[in-house]
Amino acid sequence: MKVEPGVMIQLGYGKYFRSESIIGLEPIEEERGPGKRTNVYIEGFSNPIVASRGEGAILRDLTRSPDEIVQMQENTELLKDLLDSLSGIPPMLRSIIREQGNWDLDRLERHVREVLETELDPEDDSQQLLLSV
Image 1 (tube, rainbow, N blue to C red):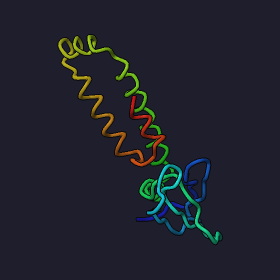
Image 2 (image 1 turned 90 degrees about the vertical axis):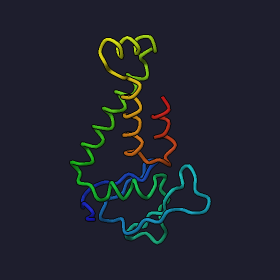
Image 3 (image 1 turned 180 degrees about the horizontal axis):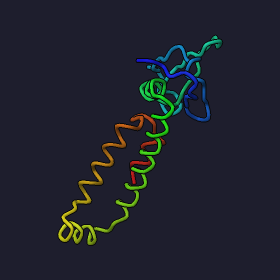
């Protein structure tokens, strides 16, 4: 696993640091909750920065290239838009689409939710709100 230099890493709540300055991640075990997921050790800081994102999400961002991060964000936004559109289709129209077009929109919606759940940090409450549509 290689850290991509020159990438701004989001720690949550407006906190960003350059990838090469992050020297350690430690999950918060006690009193973990919204806004307190990970202690992030930054070069030049004597105390860790408390991040609202989980260590897995931060680590994924650290090891992806900037192009991969942008592409992932664009794909995630597309899936969120698709999920939003799918969730607005009423049951009667879903039934017609399933019968006439052989498309199971319920299955498609479940699949999009599953994909988004694996991409998003499962402990980030604000991200989970996106999936509760």
